[in-house]
Image 1 (cartoon, rainbow, N blue to C red):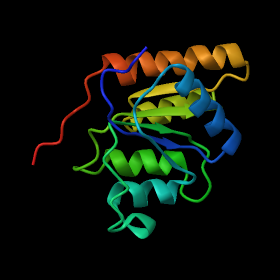
Image 2: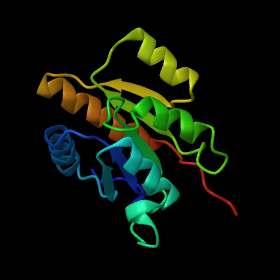
Image 3: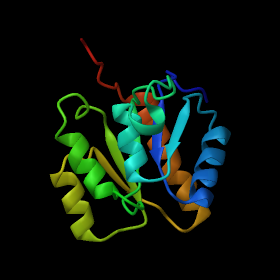
Image 4: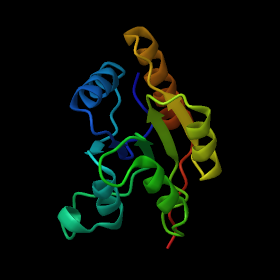
Length: 150
């Protein structure tokens, strides 16, 4: 199945193994969207604000959706979520939390801070595939992303 658009997807994931599995599943699902990865919260912020390694690099396009792990080294996903949803220029980018935490306090915190979705990473590979497929179907195929007007 081909996705309807090729808008960039930003994945904030520190685990190489989790990211490789996610990439593999998306390849199998024929996702055409360019996928950018940041391994910690500070890099996510640098990517979105085009600072640090991304300043004047031309390799940090505005993502149509952010898949955000909560437990990131450095600035964690909770702080990234909170900062992005308070930023007038970035708050409309959908952020889907993708984490191992099923703690109700984390779920509640993320929605209170403006998360657009919350997905718990299943340990079981079949369930993980279903979860990733649901993300792809909705966020990359069906959902209409906000457009940035200047």
